[in-house]
Image (cartoon, rainbow, N blue to C red; front, top):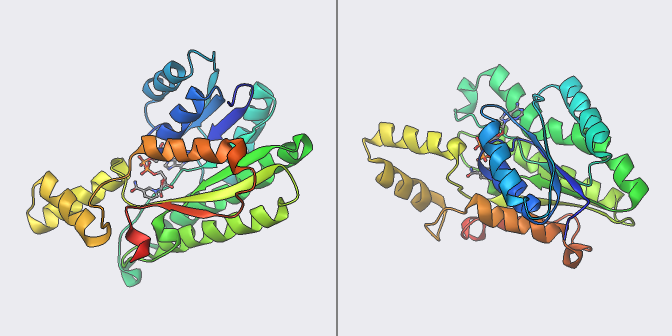
Length: 260
Ligand code: NAD
């Protein structure tokens, strides 16, 4: 379905971003990976998923907190693949603290990586999408783009912000073949959440399994983690012709969290 298209997925060396990159490659899209840590493992996974379609997989290690590195990554993607047709703004970080103790530099980092990076990638990717009259911008927000939790001021502010940004971009592109939507996951058991499970286990003297149950029980009625694979399939749907007129949505996949 996506053969000949190129998808850039920020923060795709791990977790949800890797799940989405894998699902898009399976549909035939070339992929530009981004993120920190091991690249060989994620690259091999994505290449394997796209093998039948002969996809190409590139990588750029830009820090999404640094606008000049984002510009460099977008130039690199355009020169290597011609154009970014699908932009998935996924890179994200978390910091958990009461607001009066929240380190100022962590606030700035969370806003830069979780929100401002999407402004920069979008402003840089959009002209070529509009020229070809086709594009997909998928912002990985969170259920925390819809509702709040204590101790997560920067994250909740950034995620509400990205839902707002999604709506504005959807309006500005509404008469074109470019769509912009947000995905709002509940708990997904990635390294970002495992750290919160570990903190809960340490705080309450719980096993890993009991800490996971406690985390889910506080927020997620289904008592199930959403998987990166399920989120990958939702991203594929947003890229399909059936979603041509889905615009400005904040689509939750959260086990009922936001329904409460
Ligand atoms: P993760 O920690 O598994 O992966 C984060 C990815 O972002 C990694 O590839 C990491 O290298 C990359 N990254 C981090 N900082 C970066 C930076 N400055 N520049 C470039 N890349 C950077 O996390 P995840 O759980 O897969 O989270 C992905 C996105 O999904 C985030 O935006 C997160 O807020 C969102 N989300 C996660 C959950 C969840 O439960 N895990 C729920 C809702 C939303």
